[in-house]
Amino acid sequence: MSVEYEAAIQLGNFAYEAKFEARNEIVVLFGHSGAGKSVTLQAIAGLVRPNRGRIVVDGRAMFDSAAKLHLSPQERNVGYVVQELALFPHMTVAENVAFGIPNGVDRERRTAELLELLRIGEFAKRKPATLSGGQRQRVALARALARDANVLLLDEPFSALDDALRVTLRRELLRLRAELGLTIVFVTHDLREAHLLADRLAVFDAGSILQFGAREEVFRRPVSRRVAELTGTSNIFAARVAGRDGDGGTVLEIAGSRFAARTQAEVAPGADVDVAIRAERVNLRRPGEVPNAFRAMLTEEFAFGSSHTLHFRPVGAGPMVEVEIASRPYEVLGVAQGQEWLIELPASDLHIMRRD
Amino acid sequence: MRTDRTTLATISVLTAVFAAFFVLPFAGLLNRAIEDGKTWELARSETARTALWLSVWTSTVTLALTIVFGTPVAYLLSRARFPGKSIVDAAIDLPIVLPPTVAGVALLTAFGRRGLLGEPFEEWTGQTFAFTTTAVIMAQLLVAAPFYVRAVRSGFDSVDRRAESVAYTLGASKTRTFFRIVVPQVRPAILEGMVLCWARAMGELGATLIFAGNLEGKSQTMPLAIISAFEGSSLGLAGAIALSMMLLAVALAVLVVFRLVSNREPWQA
Image 1 (cartoon, each protein chain N blue to C red):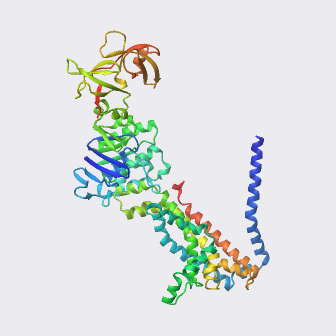
Image 2 (tube, rainbow over the protein chains, first blue to last red):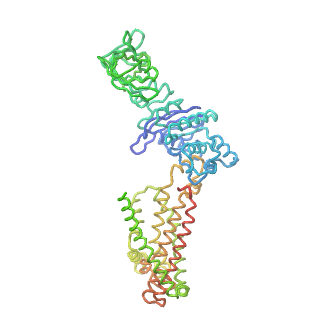
Image 3 (cartoon, one colour):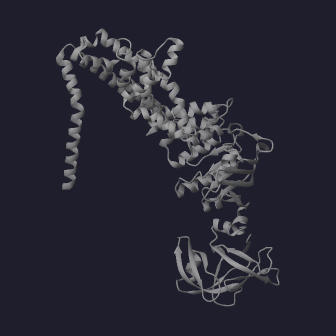
């Protein structure tokens, strides 16, 4: 169960180039709309023909520009769920699901199985227009599985649903994946959804993949300022490499203050770099002797229920910093506006990105 | 509260006046038809029956030709991109806004005995189009087909193209997708187009009169027979009323059938 993907597409002014793979896992294609996520799925499904590249599904070449190979969508056998689903409105739920079942398969039995799998048996005779958003979503998934596809392409499938329903359906998707051993390529612009579902993550921007890797790798160690921004890192500082410290780390100068970074980076002293640290990795410390810290005052705070987002302005040297802290420590520490704290940027969480 | 009442009263009065304006002509027609006492007899006259039969079968041929030629055109206009598409689009709408008499003159200049195509065609085959039953159908086709093309085109426009893409990924061929996914969704639009086209063809007068003439049994359709009756043919005014009643009945029957058929699409709601 795998997808190996490499393609370049020129569509008018839109230049696109991407390379990634998926093996028995969920790969999330993440990025803003228009970044090239959907066209990737269309290329895998055979609905768009790339100018160059090679697409292999389960070891079978679907597209290969060198060999002039381009299988039609009918020949590819990948399950495809489009945004807003595009259920067949004139057919019942059962007819929708049965539409893709190949000849020679016991149609009635297979339909019943699929309806059972997605828990929509009771709606078999209803038309899509009479169903709720979540029910329709299940119909679309059942329909996409009708050909026994091992690879499922999902294009923002949950975007039209409310939060509670999305949670349920994401869980459902993880169950399906486990039960059927599916390889899933999942498109979303929702950061939390990407984080929840991804085994590996491809960050799209303006027609290309900026970074592809394991989820934590991408979130913790973005390769560039742009990836850090897209993946929701709120603290990105311009910095200069001041030198090496005794432990093999890097000494950074950020807004007039020096910090040590433990993270690996091949940067020469004197180089201008970007440094990222996620808001939830920043520590609040009482005044005292703390390495890698600077004094700052709390100027703004936002309560999100389970967590608080705090904005600090440096007192003296140091950068402006956003800190995310869970509600419980927030209360225990007695955080309040106007207070002065030591802001610690842990050396192991300061991530250095080269500027290219 | 007071303004609400005033508004409501105004709307009611306006509606009543407008409704009366629409209902009274039909009431008048019905009233005269009953008073005359000869309506039934005149409606069964040779002239009336010939005209009705001619109208019905020419309109039906027109509709059949429209479906055969118009459906692909509607599909292309909805789906294809080609240079000059907006011109084709406008050209198809033209007969809808053009006075039918102009359409008739235009037909004469193209297919008449001195027409662009009519003249060489007559030299070659010895046949003419003008003032024949063929001319009746040509006039109807030019005037009525655009109504069908327009309706069906908007039908194709409203089909979710992603549903077609999904059908392909589910293994369905283009043909199967067209007939199982597209056509069922366009069916209401096709029915609407058929009704509009056929009704427009039944009522065609101006273009037919100029291009096909007013020859009983050959080109005298119902609307032409009504004109003739007014101008003093054997049927007279009572005949005109009888023929009008016949057309009215046909129109009502078509509307009722259309409603019955198109109401079978509950998923549209």
